[in-house]
Length: 381
Image (cartoon, rainbow, N blue to C red):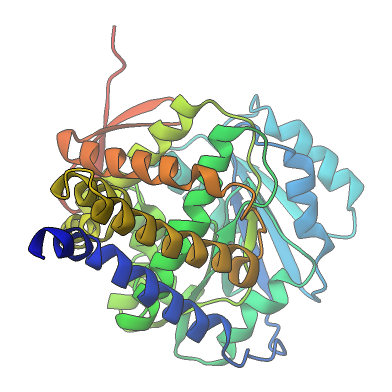
């Protein structure tokens, strides 16, 4: 009897987590949504380095906002950056929009993205500041949805979920699955059980007063996870963080699996040093090792196979509900066959995060320090 029950006990933590994630997702996405009728003036800061997939269309989506008063400030470190001609083309195509390009190579710390933000911030005209990654595309109601929560003066920061609904190749499908089947459910659980205490870098809107209360962008320049730190510092400064109802689109270029796994490892190591306790505990709820362990403790008997199958039936169902009903990327069920592969790679990445503290980011090598800070390492000779 014990041998038959043991495989099901092994899968209990990830199985329970799947149901908790579904409950939290239904509670959030099924609630009454806030009316988007508060529209304060906004400055969008876009730090740029190099070209992303379809950069011009990504940038242009911010020029087509159904919004009265907003400014866009692009920030590059070099006039030779290949994104500069694209930005100038955008400015010529939208002469009625308040768009500015700042080219400044001043460096204040190891996070060059934050350096770009520090160089661009003095040009910001308005008191709601939005930081949005260069590979993000939005619809025309993006600003209305993101700025609506600032009607509450206690709200200091609004962040957004992100998804990828169009991509090419299996490698990109693995990363897109991570957004839908792992990142968004994890955010839903955190939001429901402990409240929002971090931001997601795809889209962050912050009140100028809250940003100044934490020391401005300069307080983030020594950290790799500047998005997590921005949200966490604003939260600890006494402001309320809110998750927007608007989900932005992360536009992927075709990449190799090696590049994607390297990025996943960078994220994993960053979260390990930023939230060591929570990161370690997350291994308990990972489905892939639980399914494998269920098979092993049962000696690959029918009970173990049944436990692993039950776990992945539930996981597949929850992931598909997130994809089609909650996130709306609709990549499932087409890519469901990749879910165990993605989970296996995620577990491998989770484990590898404990075996080193070096990460590579946009051609630079860094050593991660306790608390999430980093230092740049000289290039290898």
